[in-house]
Length: 113
Image (cartoon, rainbow, N blue to C red):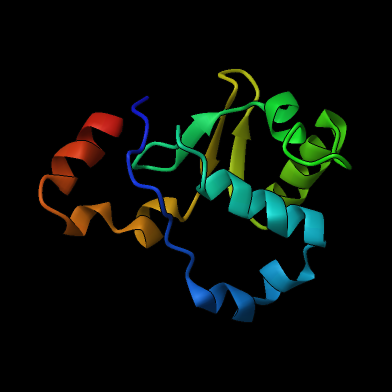
């Protein structure tokens, strides 16, 4: 996996109109934003499954609570967790990141795939 070099991430404002997202608890919504802003997320939205590392980013979070939030995100298909490969796919990352619109973006997508 290649690390992302950008210091920002696109968050589509319409997420706040998504009934499924609005039904999620605050901690699951926060985890979604944490996932899409990780430096090691690929152009296709895959990143290593690291609940212990992510739990260290807030004092009131544990690896178990991160896994619970991942489960909540998976129910409505915001993420797909593959415990065998220890990876997480942020399902709509590819569409919202729009890497396919930038120069050499298609090459980066093919390489990440």
